Amino acid sequence: AQTVTQSQPEMSVQEAETVTLSCTYDTSESDYYLFWYKQPPSRQMILVIRQEAYKQQNATENRFSVNFQKAAKSFSLKISDSQLGDAAMYFCAYSTGNQFYFGTGTSLTVIP
Amino acid sequence: NAGVTQTPKFQVLKTGQSMTLQCAQDMNHEYMSWYRQDPGMGLRLIHYSVGAGITDQGEVPNGYNVSRSTTEDFPLRLLSAAPSQTSVYFCASKATAFYNEQFFGPGTRLTVL
Image (tube, rainbow over all chains, first blue to last red; front, side, top):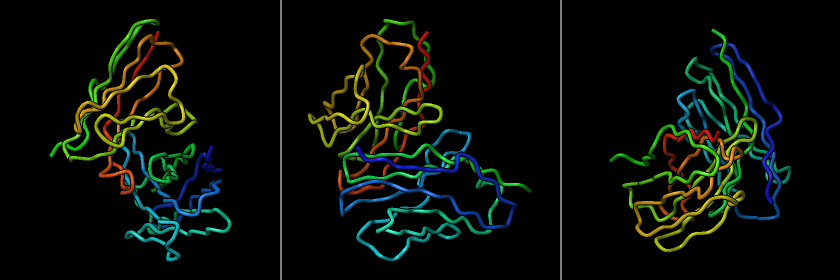
């Protein structure tokens, strides 16, 4: 089975600062997708950013960017200019299409 | 456009009872799936469907049944609930199995006593 590992159960960041959340995964596939989801206290799962494995360029969505290292099987999320609304659980996920595998999550606290 | 809807939002069952969690989407998505979320374990895939009449198992299928008679609906059945099935259940959908932006429902919190 594929595995996704988030080694940081909790992280904190000062408002307006930058924070990086780590994710590693294990796979023998060459073609797959990686995702970061945000889950605020409302419980709703919100897609933050996604990366296709065949694309070398790192994905960016406004203040969110990833560092995708395919050889190292690493997929970290960088949040710039952190805002109070960024406080949430963040889940890294891996997919080959039909099957999805999620990490155990990182709880992000934003300190005013 | 309601997206992915789930009912009920909360449910309490006794051990051995059966129930069906409902999931519907109005986006004409081919792919639908069910996950459970347990503390400290992230989301785990239970079952998925790539179209009406087609279902398959995910990572943790035991104790759950599904069927897909229409494109819109994908119910999850617990035939004999067990305390180990206490969890938050999410339904999700995406356009096709190969279009990977997945949309999630609001979740159902199930407690089995």
